[in-house]
Image 1 (spheres, helix red, strand yellow):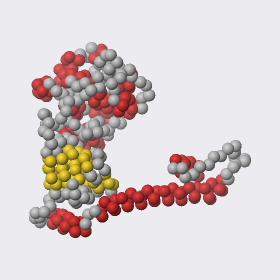
Image 2: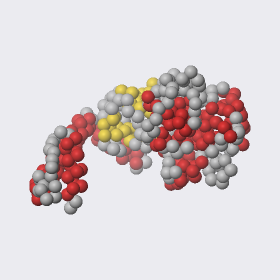
Image 3: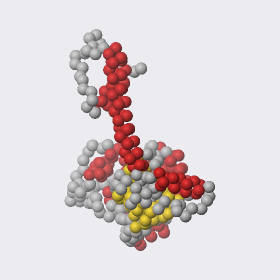
Length: 376
């Protein structure tokens, strides 16, 4: 048994919780203050017992909370649920409960009845009020939390409210009430591409979900550029600063890193233009840079970035013209063009942007193959 490692790890845990406090001063191998036999026979055993006790207490608390939520569901409800779902599995008809895959628009709210189950198949959603039980993980999920795709949630009581933050597909088993939201001016077309980029770790949406139906901002475009360059981790660990006064705290590291690397110089007057609307040429410039084109060396100009993007194989003429006609570059467009860029060759190379990101460890070939399969 490696006692020094156990001593270090165990002591760190208990010291952090305030359970154990000691110090060793002036000790040496010839004149130790604490003998090896004490460490191996007494101290380590005591520490491990305390760790076990603390872990059991935390597990008991979590289990008690989960049991309390489950107890809100009556045995009759659970019995009916089991009978109906067994009948459904056997192909028998039931008029009281069904599991259906439904599509809903952004902003819609679903008010769930007791014992209703919901699984987010595509898109983004969060719990607007109440609590759900994540059946997949066994955890209680509180209001304000995002639903994780392909995980099953159970409503332990009536009137828990789910807000859909993008166009979605959900599997619902049980009763619910649909509350229509305000229809957006634009309807997202590329939710499945957002799911694909999310699975690859390239797109996470905002705290409100994917938000595909609103215009992109310069900050969001810059963050996406750093992800497509495979430099997000380096950006988040960067310790330098930037000269801009309008950068939100969540984007501070991204902007500082990008400024140091020369990816952005701001819009003047000490401003980055964080909330300024991202344009088509802005984002095509970012994507071309990710493909190793250099506008400073004359590979393209900002005003011609969209046309150069067509020549580089990112988007086609029709897709570019469609965005120009709308005169708004939506987050939906950001998602779609980013995904398409993964299949474009880097400048003067035979390898694609996806190959570059795989070799950099941003995602694996297995992950990339899987998202393509899911999309097809």
